[in-house]
Amino acid sequence: MKDTTSTDEARRQDKSDADFTDRPIPLDQRMPRGNLMMAWWAVCSAIFYMVVAAAMARSYGTANALVGIVLTVICYGVINAVISRFAMRSGLTVALFSKVLFGHLGATIATLIFFATALYYAVFEGYVMALVLSTWTPSLSMASATLIVVVVGVSLIFGSVQHWLDKFNGVLLPVYIIGMLVAVGMAIAEYGYPSGWLARVPEAGASPWGWLHTFAYYMGVWVLMMFTFDYARFGRPEDARFHGRVTFGIPFYLMTFLFSGLVGILLDACLPTEGLSEASIVLGLLELMGVAGLVLVWVTQSRINTANFYLATVNLEAFVRKLTGIKLNKILAGCLVGALAYALMAADVFAYLLKALAYQGVFVVAWVGVALAHMRSRTYQQRFRGHLELDNSRIPAINPCGVGAWGLAIVVGIGAMLSPTLAGASAPLTFAVAYLAYGLGLRFAKPGWYSIEASSN
Image 1 (cartoon, rainbow, N blue to C red):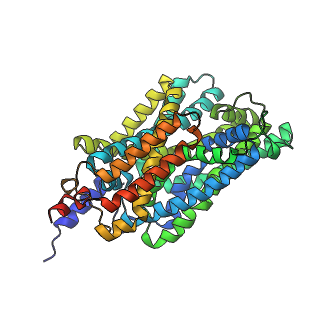
Image 2: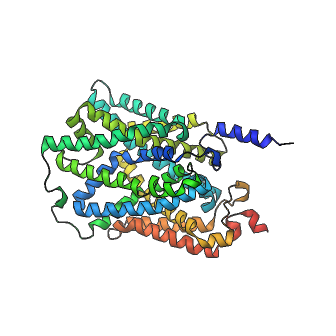
Image 3: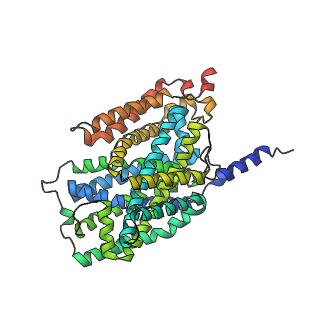
């Protein structure tokens, strides 16, 4: 007689955890390739990417900025091809995979960092939406506009990646692309073509290492590697080649960094704005395009904020469960994220958030170094047969190999960041130390560091 107990339990789990935050995603719950691609490509439309590119062009010259961006596109595409394939094979979240790397207690820190970073980005992008809305409607206070942004942002994530976000973001993708091209065309028609934009250099001249500084600066956004991991797990293993090459590969980053970067640099050269920030860009678009500018900003920011709010929510769920054993309902977790985002926007602590993100960027780059070393390690495959233990009762609290490599890289990264001579190389140094230290540590790792059960055999 067929035992239906486990099947019924699995169905109950599927209903209570549609995003599979506490276990690998079953193969029958994976998404078709086109749906996953549209859900993920929401991440490509942040105004933030335009501002970063324009800032790099101002600081190091347009040519240096574009060379650095092209190198960034290649680097991101290659690394995320590896990460996405691993996530599809394992079906794990960042939180679950971190238990393998750092132990069940060490993974709590990684989950907290991921949650906080996604939340901060939701705050920044949400603030831009609120600013545009309150500027367009003077009778609407900034507090009210912020509340609208948070309510809309949180509401959009309740439909799950598999059942709603792919459709929502797929419909809005053409609006983003066409809208940005129209914005550039209108800016040129209104203010004239900036003929020297490609040859633009700082007043003091372009540094010969400007391209490297640009590349290193973009490493500060390596949280996208963690974003990739949590989205790629929804992919089907048979689609791994397509997703590795297209969905999470170089074509995506051509759109995310190069297309957005060119638009940002051109708009910065055209629009008569005094400073450079997300606010100055969007207010310039609003003045230039009117209601179309309002729609364009809300489309671009709504798309990226579905990812920010979604990942902040699922990682808050994972963090609370690790810390307290309590399994939060997704709606409650989403509401808590919304409340935190609203409080941070209302408190106007953006200068502090930027500093926090700079330090968190070191933690994230170090995580990527350790994670990539693990995925690429033949040593782990040979010594541990590639086994990924997820049961807390059979995992040590701290994995010395992972925590040691992660901690060493963080110390080196923060030390370099605080040094005037090494600050520009902080991110590359962090990654190199994390990757090499973990790879070396695996050669001496004890079985009990990865599985308590293995140590007793």
